[in-house]
Image 1 (cartoon, rainbow, N blue to C red):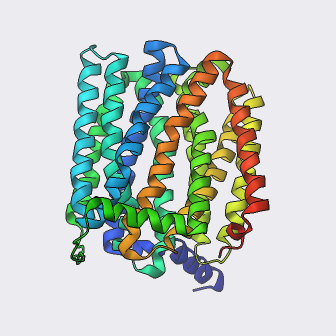
Image 2 (image 1 turned 90 degrees about the vertical axis):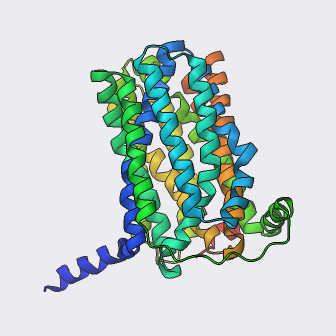
Length: 413
């Protein structure tokens, strides 16, 4: 074997180190299938809402309905994830998501679907996700060794973004050819893959500590840890602002495809896929660089790159360049989010992991509806490009503030 071939093999083994674990392989493949379906539904649902209402504000309202349960239930979801089997909890939540997808498909197939139906189902889906997400984020610790945890976190982002590339594109083509109901049906079927993967895993039983404390006391313990840890608190706050002023702007893509770029549902699919492709490239880079000691520096690069790319996107009116700009948005977003996750997970003790990561999940998912509501309302009153420019300005202020006041982040290894 030549030196170059051996070097390539070693680099690939390092990039995909978590895949040597049987349980993680099941998780990865099951999640990829399921997430493709999820992105198909997200893309098709957004365009269907815009077709039914013609309103950017209603797009924001649906995003708000989907994210509101994060504020209501995620912290309790973290307590539950620390008290019972995370695998069993996810089997329940994924089954609920499967049922909701089939209900939306049935309403759409029969022509009965109304905007308020989508609002209610979005809220219910958000409720299931509020209990699923803390368990899902903390579950990685049960799938791989601690040495491979950072790599597994990066590969989790990779599978998410493989789906974010494939799902919207397939959704655009499926929607145009067969209608939105088939997108929702495919999503429902796709949940079978992740449920089967969870049931096939060989998970070592986690001995839960005997608990005399109440749920509220456990919740307070997790919050006390977060607020006493300056690095974790800074990262969580930054994640919230990125969700509001960065990802919140992506709620406008169905309107952007139609109004700004004068396209259709396929255009919308390409836009969503472009952001996903950028995130995928970023996640693969981070998987390869997982053992390197400069996560804080990569976080800082992403924090400055994201507002720049959003501002460029707001100025462009030509689809190919818009796609390039969204690739940049996705790349920088993943630099921020994945490094935030990895830096936090390296600090958190195992017995608090579910609760602390539920705070992270709460802020991440809970801030999205605020961003969606802001973006939709502002775009309705003014226009989409000005709204995105304001989001870019807010994120640039965050990047500068982090550089000046939070130097501890960029020093993290």
